[in-house]
Length: 350
Image 1 (cartoon, one colour):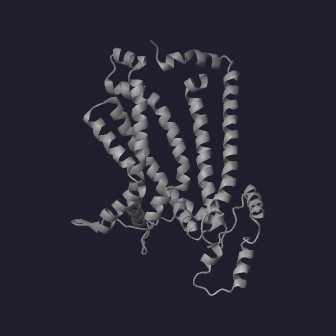
Image 2 (spheres, rainbow, N blue to C red):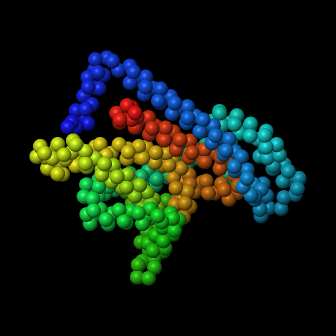
């Protein structure tokens, strides 16, 4: 019986002897095929983004003119300024041409370049979704590897049950529940945390400002973590269950290693591979944030910006934010596939 490291030694020796070109070519070919698939997906996103949003009800010009007495002539001039008087095909080719030049257009509502608006909102989304991702990954991996190593234990039953309950909850419902209980306050429970925005109106400076932002982050971050961390827990638990019965684990135990050491040094590193792939895939969603969570808590990120664009509807702003979200997800999924192909010898040999 051999461990995965011992089984991989011939391959390592072959690599050291200079005969690694076939493996290198195989990895490069695999990566190029994934990049080609990603480019095709991005092209489909560009096409779909334009036409799908045109199906939304509402006239942007009339919605923007609400509260102002504009004559039909003025409405026609505004529609001409926005390019909405052109045929759908002409608008589509203008959109594709600008997109290929990394020009996402100008927002109807804000009258500013879409890229500038995205650049302003991106840090808030990165702070919220990125922080939530780090907490969810850490919590999910920690609970998952302990639950998988002690399958059927009280810890396994409680942690798995709680994660499944939270994962099955609609995000908007959980967010509203936390907002009502810990933000507004209910019964004997007082409102403990701010309910909207990223900072207070009279936000202080220095370390007090950091604490103020942290207080505003608690509820939206808790909502994100509660819904997401179950994925990492279940994947880690399932992967570790597959490793527990492997020969190299039994050999390590037979050598007299402590159970905790066998888990930490041998089983967990091999079980982490699927979780690493899932983390890369979830990084793409950090760019888009969580539209529902940002809307509930009025968090000034990309999700809130996308929601504001839908209300108008602001076609250029919707297209820009949606494309950024979907393209980042596609790229991260492609990177996850390539990384998994590199770090797992079993995939390369398949």
